Each structure stands twice: as structure tokens, then as C-alpha cells.
Length: 186
Image 1 (tube, one colour):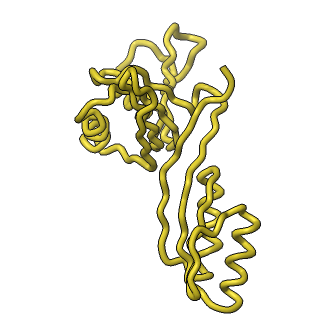
Image 2 (cartoon, rainbow, N blue to C red):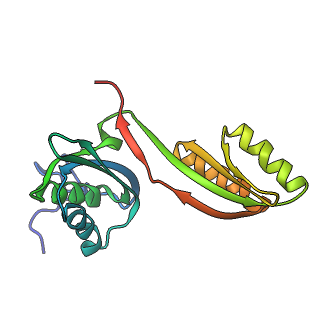
């Protein structure tokens, strides 16, 4: 039995914040990680995620500084704010990691993705697929008498919307590059 009769979460009678400061809401975050371009770095980063049961929604990697041998890994992941903070802290402890930026938190950023869609169809479905591709500014990169391959770039939401519209028209196959992102401004 407590000698103090203070309700949990009451701040007027206590110097301590007794309210929980965590959230159960899953958030989507884009992380930009600058790493040494050497064998095994990507495996260590991915191992961090898989070893703790974190999911990766999108992953892109490319060398960005040839002379400095640096690569940029862009990771899109989801989790509670506590999980995201833990991921960032653990990424920062990997020896080959130079910098970890949470583009979602740090301010406005630009995200783009490239995707290719193979759509098979005849007659009206074929015409409708071409019409929708024009609206979404998708390019036809291959065409046969029975199918098209469209190339589209844009925000992941735009790519998802295009895929949803192509499904009933005969979407056969999809290839996506994953998100590339940069923060805006200085």
C-alpha cells in the first residue's frame, strides 16, 4: 500500500512525469545511412533488422562517393517511435556506419521510385491501359501484340495507385527499385 495517495499520471502533486511517453502507433520512416563501401556492410545492416524482427519495406543501395568509398543505403521501415529510435541507435553503433538520418523526422524530403509493369490484354483493356499510362505519365518501353511494359517514376503512392488500376486490366508482373530519398533545402 502506498503512503502517498497520488493518482498515476498526476503531475500537480509530483515532480516526475508518471504518464507513459510511448506510442503503440506504427509509423513509416525513411532512413538514409551513409556507410563505408566495403564487403559485408550491407549484410551487417540487414542482419540488424532481421535479428531483431524489424521489417524493411524498401531498400536501395548505391555508391555515392567513389574517392571516399562511401555508399548510401536508403531504408523504408515501419514501427513504433521507440522501435524507430532503437533502430537508429543500433545502426549508429555499427563500425562502418558514418551517418544515420531519419528523413521523416528531419523535415521535408523528396522520395521517388522507379517501377516497371507488364500488362497483358487485348481490345478495350489494351486501350484503357494506354490511356491510364498517359494520365500517370508512364512510358511504354516494350510492346508486343498481347502486352505492354510500362515504366513509371514517382512517389511510392503514385506507383501503388498505378498498380491498383492496372490489376483489372491484366497486370502480369511488377518490378520496383525501392525508394530513393533526399532531404529538401540545405
